[in-house]
Length: 512
Image 1 (cartoon, one colour):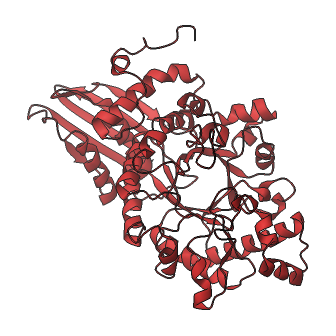
Image 2 (cartoon, one colour; image 1 turned 90 degrees about the vertical axis):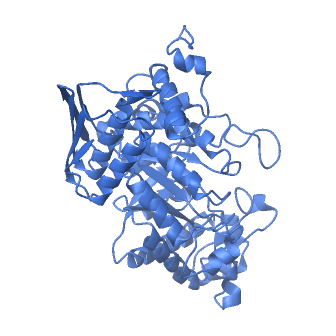
């Protein structure tokens, strides 16, 4: 294959990955000449909310020669075109073949398409993380949301505050160094995937913060590992930042600085969910601080305290990032309820929506001008439908969310049918979606089967925005999942017997 006009190492690396998919097959021989030409306007483009990921793929054949042209405005679009080309090439035995004439013009309907991976509750190897990226890339999903810290552990290694991992990592081996993260970020980038870090705060902050007192900085977090946990957090172990301690903000800024050194993308997730007011209300250092500031020990008083953190943390992030903000993401929470939404600026924050699709926060957010990423738990949480890990019965968000339910997660229909919003201008506030794998019961051994193929269903929903339902998509998804296992080594959950894979269109309910 002759490659033309791939001038950057980034695009050349993408071509190398493409070729690697077929290296086990014999070359077509000297009689067949294949020329691949790129016409990419910006090979160094940074993926953000406004990126043009469109591409055109043209294949023409004449007298045994094949000419392929991929045209795109950005590297990401060019890489998507290359991915489509790779999937047009089918191989059986020692033979590969592809259509002789192709014209495809394609682009995604939504800018943000991906999966959340939680590596705090359980640690994941780099091999698992990069295999997940392989699956995302093949399905043209563009975001790995890395929930890298939580109350359970703090595996992110901060070179400015190394005691965070000394106190917070499960073991010295279960950490992510700057070198590790840069490797993952670069691995993802050449595959068209951005890696978005999340430093969850001010709740979900416990183990890792306990070293402050011995260093003369006071308590950085409160309620850490407090029991009975039900009174102070949503699941064990508990922990929230000590907003009465001014030293906390220097530590947070240093962690921001270290994360910004490692994660170079255009977006940053600052967490913000599941703050427990009783934790603060039963901590004398917090209540004394509130009394001094004239904040009442009421819902409104605790929201005022939380907002003080929100403003200071944003200021520290901006300073750490050279005076600029990124695409700042936060979770739906008490602060995104209508009464308290005044604390947030829609020109700064994009809200990741994890509540039920029927919750009234969703229509209010779009009406108030916020961009929204859909992760509503009743459709898109991948940890649901398993046995409870605390107590008995099934876990809190059961039942299991099958790929069909994920495929039918149509934001426009949710807004129209559940909330009466039919204005396309408000529909456009939904900028994408993520499945979410919270890992209380997931690790290296089963993460791939929980993420795939269900996240492939999200890929088609948020790329194509199809008007047909899951029934029409099933043969495509079954085949794609099989190919990902056999040719790419991404072993998701098996969907059907192999006989059904080889006999498409027969293994179905005929009354649908």
